[in-house]
Length: 358
Image (cartoon, rainbow, N blue to C red; front, side, top):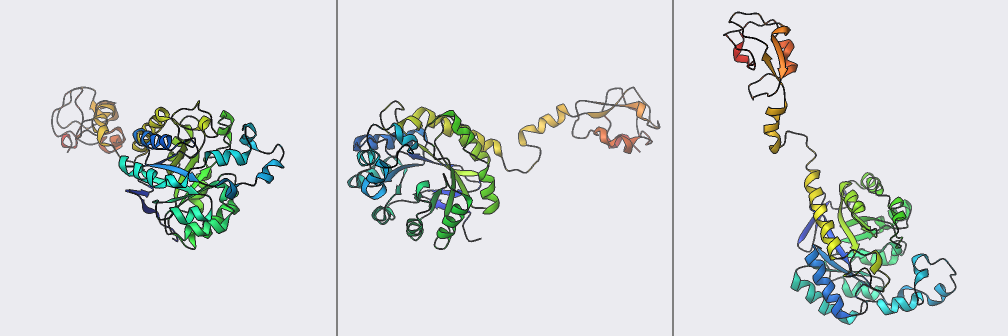
């Protein structure tokens, strides 16, 4: 294969059988306040996140003020913003002079520092400071940036929201020309947090990814409330989960309303760890905690009445009743014992064993 099915991110190793890696996307939820950013890092760690991720962009390098002012009504969730798109991006961007402080805070609490860089300067600045680089869905067709990121030699997390399979294949191929370590993340880029989003999350795309790129690490970048999509994605093979993170969903800001909070995040991780245990190896066998059940729930061939040695067994002499001790004969052995001769006297209700037969 041209890609790796196992590779490290920070102190964790990603693989198809490894525990899920959780990324708390703080994004704009620092609200332009460094102390809030540090607090959210600590809260994310306490809630069970493996990484605290930011988004580094400059308004002038990510959006066109003229373009959005002339776009009309086609602004999706941004239509409800009280300021222009350019002003919101400028207000909520993560200040690059915070970098050392944020990295220090992450190291202090033991969580990976990560970011999505949205311009060439950010890509070059942060490549050596993060264990992996996340590409947001909106940049999947900006192949110049995709290639620049791939060349940095860090694992690449590619979100695939609002994209076609052809566009995904083009971006994946661009990455694989330079980098074997890729996480392909299904995503729906509607940020309204309305329950109708569930009809569009399309988790079964993960099956399609697994068929198209067998063994590739898969993930989910999600914006729904609750845990249904996360648990479903993990069951379908996702091993990286990214969700937005805040301390208060009622705060004013572009990302707070659809983010997870410390309580819901902790619950999500707990439920996910339970699911991972429940998924098991896929090899069907009698589990260790079922061994007693095999005895008490299965039926054994038992004698309907007392019989003497030399008796030729018929079906009428036997019945199938619980329990079935280890030396008991299961009912499917009936045809093998009918017509055999008893080697010793037996009592009613006792289970038949091979030692009872000549």
